[in-house]
Amino acid sequence: QVQLVESGGGSVQAGGSLRLSCAASGYTIGRSRMAWFRQAPGKEREGVAGIGGNGVKRYAEFVKGRFTISQNEAKNILYLEMNSLEPEDTAMYFCAADSGLLSSLYSTAYGYWGQGTQVTVSS
Image (cartoon, rainbow, N blue to C red; front, side):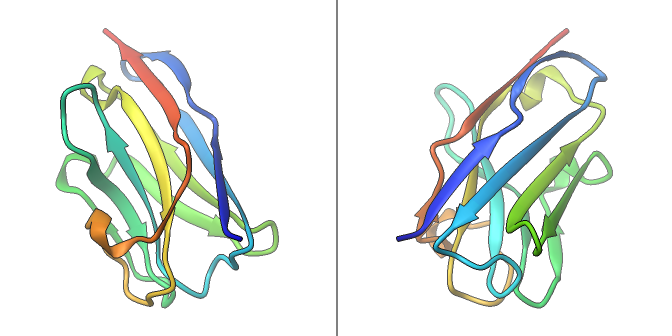
């Protein structure tokens, strides 16, 4: 049974940084695609950053240059390093995984989801 558990969320001021972690069990990181999504109140879930089983990374335009997705295969953990945070980044952040190879920022490409971790950025 695949389980994804996010952590690292919190409250920061604009310009601050956070690192989110997604610990996986029943799933081996590095072989298939994983991604981070976010959902703000009243808005649809949107893809933030993804990584394929081939290591190719992709980012949403609104986070390019600020966020970095990475993975530690030895620890089986996916990370999202977030810098220069803005109030618009406030949302629940979710980790997602799938057995497919290529990275994707479409939620329909993922079959496994974590419960999410809240990120709040104040101005």
